Image 1: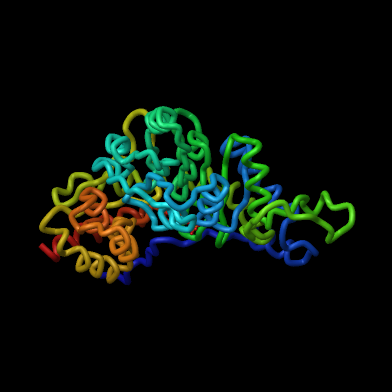
Image 2: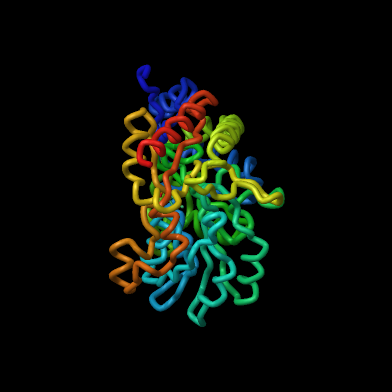
Length: 384
Ligand SMILES: *Cc1c(COP(=O)(O)O)cnc(C)c1O
């Protein structure tokens, strides 16, 4: 065989324009809370049609800040999908709240809406959800449940840049949307995040709370360095270097999303007939995924050969990942704290324990996707 292609799972596309933008910031006097963050927020609002956008240090900080703003405290409960990044649950724990996990729906990996109401108690304050791998959660149903029980809705949009539901971008259906610009996500600022909200009062308070709760930002200070503090707040800001990266990356997002969609369709077509695997839905007629990756769920008995298949793929130059490595309630901390058994949350566990994530990122083209599909078929044949 020819020298294998190198197909990393994630590879940020950082071009000359990004480098130029970063150097410009580094050459100037302002590295934090300056015009770049403000410009990135404005651009993000234009892209998502969010009335308010708030740059953040990362998505975990965004989730934590939202629960801080909502005043989640010991004894409060928040509904959390079992199939997500640990950050979705950690943000609740950080406020001494309790994440109450709900299993995944098998067809999409999204939170199983049918199971939410029986997880709600008098202590429930909010419902959080993840648009898993970019596939929209049915927010009409989520909002109906939230309204009925007087709950806030927090959308973890870390995998949902370019995800729309009924023409409205993810993060604007619930009360708050929290985005991530970590390097392997749809676009990157190295580390970074964003909160979207339609609530002006909340946006103003979140903006204060992310920066020490000082009562006036730099531009509003009559005498430099003089301000008062109205509460307890974090330092969860995005810096100007990250914001400068974000402004350029956001301009590339339409192209990134197009490439993901095309790559996904190539590999989906090549793999969907394979009897050894099952693919999650990436469209259902009403809405469509923003194609974070393709997750191939191995059927038994192939599931037991997962790491052998991964090794074969790696040997062929194909990088893989797992989204996410365990159902969150099965991670050591949550399992031990709340006493969850391995048999709980079977659908989230099935995805975590039996799936291999293949990249459809914009660093790859149709030939890469065909090569990857071929490598996947050969790996299956080898372990058969
Ligand atoms: C990546 C991810 C996060 C964490 O994002 P950071 O920006 O790294 O804090 C949170 N939630 C989900 C669903 C993620 O995939």
